Image (cartoon, rainbow, N blue to C red; front, top):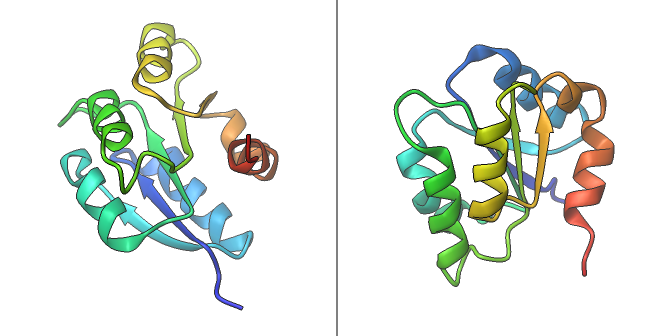
Length: 124
């Protein structure tokens, strides 16, 4: 059976690389992005099962890219888990408004990744 694909966007090495490694431990194939402006294009081309994004990005507005992902018919169905510093409450609220499926702290995502994946992947 083919391993599901997860698209992971991050600039900061930690916790981004930890998330990618943990996904591989959970038997996901992982495609890593460091450029938020390529999120929609890569999601359309690679067809991931889930998208995980570090909301704290210096080069681009990740929330705006999530909103674009939600506007595209080919990608609007994708569950998106956003993670950031737990003190970045304004950023977390912006991510929710942009259409992020689940927003969690960067400290919790590593420990509870299997539960967050299950929650985000539940069909309504």
